[in-house]
Length: 158
Image (cartoon, rainbow, N blue to C red; front, side, top):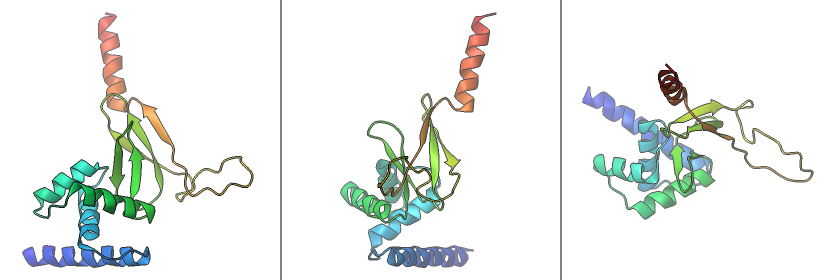
């Protein structure tokens, strides 16, 4: 069983290395580690969460290194970023371009499919501009928080 897991990890590492090369980036240990953690974690992760996950796995990297890696991966389209509020960027190993809904109460981030599935998803009505990407972020209450607010309102009116 351990051999199967090790073989799968090696295969994933080779795929990550190939993706880095195709994007024009050098294959480095920090880049491979950050890609692996993002893939394994699923969802959206902050730099601090990535640093903690790397430390937990026994492959610690300095915070500055993780920032540099994330910025390089982002600039080359290998990961996606979600604006989760002032000064709070979260990253994910995105396969397809999409938008985000951020709950203002609990902070959950929900992926929202892009109509076109590629960037830029939206085109501005601005003649002559070249758009690299457009990201929509909806903010409000998720179904759970909206339901809790409604339940409190109903209880208070009885």
